[in-house]
Length: 322
Image (cartoon, rainbow, N blue to C red; front, side):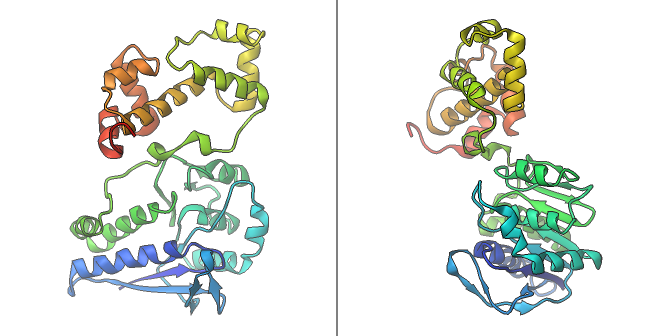
């Protein structure tokens, strides 16, 4: 039996408390009685825990487990994260104690911030939801944050991307403990994708906190309004009455990238939308977003999303004309 504990705490997502145990239960049934299963418990340093949405959870006292899973919590950009974490000092201490005992610690989504507070991400690779990856990197510069990854394991500490990435982690755990065939079958029974490798295709830059000030935003709007036009740095600089050198410097200072890098990401974002919602050919979409060579477009699209355009359409198609 592999002992798995899920750390429940005030405001945690109830679905992330039960998602991993439920998939492990399914794996146990798939594996059969002769395969070593999982002993799962929901633990807490508190006697009573109310999860997000006002859901009261039944919890057991902290105990020694082989794997401690730390779910995420409700967090909206701009909220006082310091105050949230300060109120969870008991949980942070429990996480640190578990790791100090040499056992595995796993976070789901923004649960990574609690691992960071416990000092577990220093000099380790880590991930979290793409929406909060920059914040995690800012708060914990000692961590090597990899926002493109779904699951990252480094020296006994595992972090995952948002919400559904708990299933990617659970399938990895099942694969290691119960075998690849049990993991594959469990994924089929649960209708869970067991072939994902990146969260990049899910990134929507419009939801990310705005960086920079009015100058870079004006340049971005100009580029967005002319996606199909040939990139002309000199003409762009002339539009804003600055030199090309000044434009590049100011844009980089405010946006953290070059105008051309932003244009590529914006074009890919538009191409993703067209692939998901229209019947237009890949070649037609390539032209519509400003690229003349389909091969160049496909390579750039794959760099940004982890998938070639046709593979992306097959995975994320939402219906024509939507």
